[in-house]
Amino acid sequence: MEDLRRQFEVNVYGTVAVIKAVLPHMRERRSGHVIAVTSMGGLTTMPGLGFYHGSKFAVEGILETLGKEVADFGIHVTAVEPGSFRTDWSGRSMIRAPRVIADYDELFEPLRARRIRGRGHQPGDPDKAAAAVLRIVAADQPPTRLLLGTDALQHIRAGRDAFERTMRAWAELSASTDFDDVSRSA
Image (cartoon, rainbow, N blue to C red; front, side, top):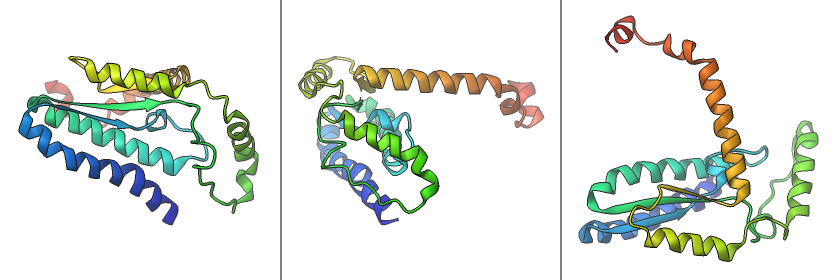
């Protein structure tokens, strides 16, 4: 539980604290642009990173809602969602939880090994990511979400395609849960 609290303290509470510090000034000016770095991990998941993903999903929801709340004040909100970049994310800065349940070793060992092997070989260039963020700062109509990196595009497309297939396959059951008078009036 302490690991979960720490993850949310940094990724969620820290992000919200910064937004709360700048937002009053932006509202007063009736302009501004909140840009927060989340992750492709705020839109998709990988085994072994549940707390990280949970925190990034929370930030995504907060940013999307905030964007709708402040749009009339001339304030833009963009979630920047990088994929794998050549930073120290999977190196010294990653705190790995100790293994306590051997049942997961077969799943997690290859993933951890791949992350360690991939260090320094990630496809994303941090300098190009910075240039992309500067482009959205200058845009009249910046995106609400900006995926960065080909791996982010691939992972998110695959996840969205799978979600669409599941939604279509179960649409009849989903729709069947309304009161009868609701479906007749629609």
